[in-house]
Length: 380
Image 1 (cartoon, rainbow, N blue to C red):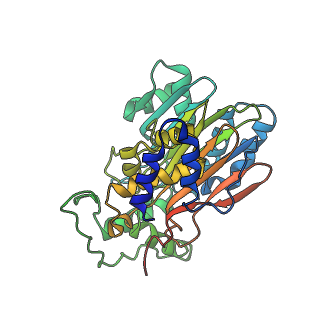
Image 2: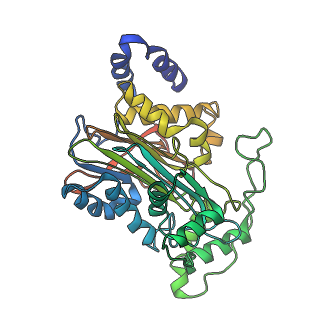
Image 3: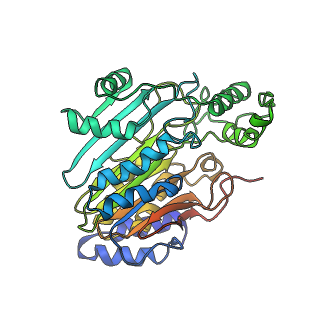
């Protein structure tokens, strides 16, 4: 059954009293994550792979009876503080002007509240800032200089977020390409860019040389960064957060899906939560977080709900793999019973490591993502 036929079959089948049964029938024809559980376990906390070494912090809060939103924030704040993680917070890869701009949102299932910030500069822990918007204002989203001023007023410290490693990668990118200033992948005028120029020699000391291979990778394939984190406690209460430094080398002011409620994150306390990492523009167009939660509401398991969202992304390009190979996107989902799953557009990362996500349901571990296309994201 090809991708489009499978999707049409599923959507046609989701009617009336046969919804749950159709979901199970459809699931049998889709790839499954190797380690996805058949039944749930609570408490559990999941995240994109870059949260793995910090999941203990969130689980400690869950085991002590703490709030699920505090648990996910404890995990992602540690990633935001880590200068070795160039996808969020301190050390995040900058925009084309060399400025690190951060986005984040939170959703609190028990109280059905949310908060969001976008295009924030010089404030490291924007996931906590999003919670502060939720707790301290009558607004849901603050952006740009206003969000930064609000952060300072609320006691957040301003700091330079650009590390030397990220600065050199930005200079290397500037010397090689101007990727943002050409028609986008979804434009009829899109053409494969010419990447024949050589990267300038910026890494001129032994310390800098160890970054060279990584810099070539992020210049050739600008990462979208991001960490999504979802947690459910023993009572079935669920919360989530997504935080990012956004697409590397983006036009200043670009905002992806991470701070968009219903795209980069969506939580419904009656059902579960879902989030995303990867190319936010594609997720926004399908409202991925909301789509996945609604699929779970109709009886789908988390992994198959993530795959359905990926079908919609691919359909927007008529399954043209030449264009689809130009980006990556991952979805993550957790229902209130503790069943979790994830799916990726391709079966590996750009560095050819397996597409995986992080899980802690007793001890931290990795689990394989299902994939829409059982192929490498890039060809040699």
